[in-house]
Length: 88
Image (cartoon, rainbow, N blue to C red; front, side):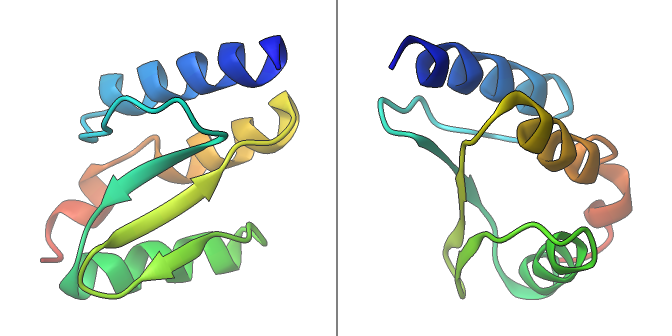
């Protein structure tokens, strides 16, 4: 449980530093609110990176936290928010 808490804190901090609005969470996942074309672009980016996420069209994406290496892959997809900013 301590590893999940630490990874959640690390992931949330990194996403916020990259400009994403991520709500606080006590669960083993983070929520990325998004919709429209940005939603489609993000889902495609996760698919291309072979990262399984749960998308809710017109609402957001649930990203389950895993081991540090997998979380690093998630953070790599989301590190450059500007590649998704033109898509609303």
